[in-house]
Length: 307
Image (tube, rainbow, N blue to C red; front, side, top):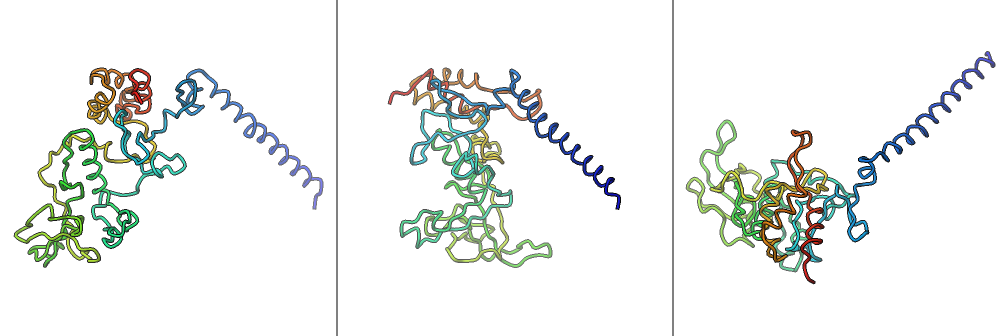
C-alpha cells in the first residue's frame, strides 16, 4: 500500500470539497441574493407583498377568501374562485381536490345522522366533482342574480346522473331498462327526481344504503345552454388552490352586486377592475385575468363601505 498516494488522493478530494463549498455553498446563493435585489425583481423575490395603510396585508400571488365568520360572501367584495387548499387558500395545504372528469356520483349522507343534527360532511356526504360544479354554479347564480344552469346539472344543484339497470348488449350498454335511479338525489331530501321517466321507466330517487353500482351510469345533459353564464373559474378550483386571479367574465357578473353594496355605479366598479386586469404573458401565454385582492383593496380605498 502506497501511503503517500492515499494522502495525495484525500488531499485532492478535500481541496475539491472546499472549492465546491465556496462556489455552490457561498458564491451561488450570494449571486442569487444579489440578482433578487435588481430593480424589477426585488418585489417578486420578497413575495410580492401588498401593503394597506403602511402595513403588509397579503401577497398578490396568493388568493384569499372574502367571506364573513360563517363563510358567507361579503357583498361589497369581489369573490375569488373556489379553493381546495385546506379550508381555502391555505399555503401550507396547497393542492387541488384530485377529482377527475369521471367523478360524477356522490357518496350519500346518512339521513339518521342528518336528523341528529350532523353536518352533511360529518354524516358521510362526499360530493363528486360534477355536483361540486353544479352546487357552486347554483350558489353563484343566487348571489349574483344570473342564470346558473349548466349541462349535466339538476335544478337543485347536483349532478344529473342516472343508474340504469336492465339487460345489456355485447358492448355492455343497457338495451331494455327495467329500473332507473337518480343516484345523486336522496329520497330523504328530494321530493321527486329531476327526471320523471327515462326510456319509459319511472325514475326513482336514491335510498341510503342501497348499491346502484350494478347499473349503467348515465349522465343526463339536460336543456341548459352549452355556454353557461357562470364561467368555469367560478365553479372549479385551481390545481394549487392558491390562484389569486379570476377571469374577466367572472368579474363582470359580480360588478352589479359590488356596485350596489358600495352605492356607486357599475361603470365606476368596472374602471377599477380594468386597472387590475392583466393580459396574456407575451401575448399568448395563459389567460387574461383580474387580481381579486388588488381590486378589493382599491375599492376599499376609493369607495369605502361605512361600518
